[in-house]
Image 1: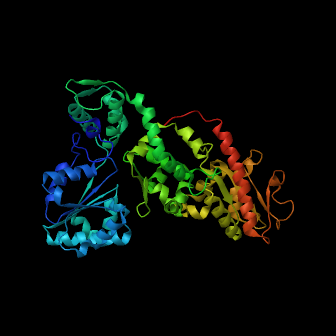
Image 2 (image 1 turned 30 degrees about the horizontal axis):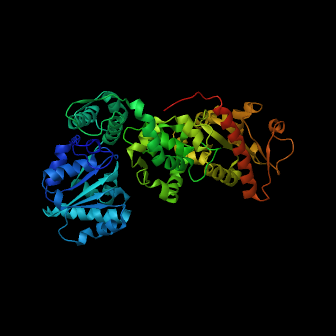
Image 3 (image 1 turned 30 degrees about the vertical axis):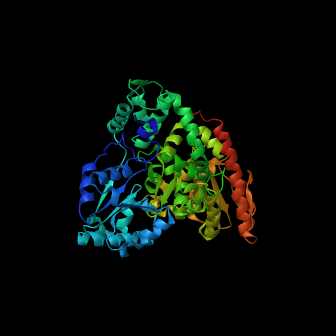
Length: 502
């Protein structure tokens, strides 16, 4: 008479509830082909390790398998030595995406050698996250012809339902809220196991009985307890990631939005370069932390907290979660409340940019330095040099006009002596001059500019700049003032937002 923890396993390889994923037969053929190395990739909790273990058991190879985990330093040393060990038998490398590039390249060469020899005594099975196999091909394009890559994606609802039915049979129970479990599991066998386990326990079913028992508790009934348990595990990592290297209340919360995109994804992974194209309003914030390497630095600096839950591969720009229970947790909480707990007043930004810089060519060095300071503080800034590849095929006036007219929350013109002499600053100022008096322009007036020129900003508050003084110190102070204004805007905007759940 099996116990509930043996049937609906919260962790480990399932026994009573194992379900063959799609392409299971193809995986089996590849694994038993001599010399043919296999890559199984996909999000955690989708059935990668369980499927490989089941196939090896069917092939009578389970007792001769060596399992190596890349989280174990001693195992990594063993992995590095594999090419010199002769006949290695069947070796599984779990989470191989975590290996450094040098080791990955070495393993790639080894797999090519095994395939060319058709070696019947050595086989490598690599298990990793989404797109992990793509990285191997980068080390040798011809390796793609010598290995089989199986991507296990979100399981279809009928397979999740089949898992539950196997559990019902093993425990001799009837689960009333089966349809809701299938729905909220989003194709994850692991989430389905977790919910079934909790619902059975709450319904008083702890082991199989002679008479069929009715499991009548609902997902909603157990959800609070499940989320409380998951919060203890995942909350700190989520908050630490969402805050970035430093909480920037004036910024556009780029890491928070990466989390949100992860929540909305189907396969627990986000290709950030593609996501930025799909969300151009975050190009100036998320785009900056990706292109400037800030995300990579964050993952490295906070590895002790984040490494267990997230993985970022800068070469492919793929950000993924290691544990689907974390995504389930984020999907189930009140998102607006979480935003406040992280420390941001809002996650909604009505304008495409926070700031658009307008400046004369000779003042580019000052503009670039101001841009860098603001971008580091996660402020979305339009700076023409960053947009050249987008402007390239456009009619320039049509591209720039709406940015200065309305798409930036604030236009920040650098009013130097050269500003009124340039054609493009004349064009840009014509677009935003109507925004004086509407709190849309923050002029930076150079001390060296002639008195009385550009009369409109003289009537409104402006910031002073002495190009002969401490440039870095002044620009830092100017950026701080702009950021203080943005903080106030965020706070006022949050008071108008409706209450929304994920």
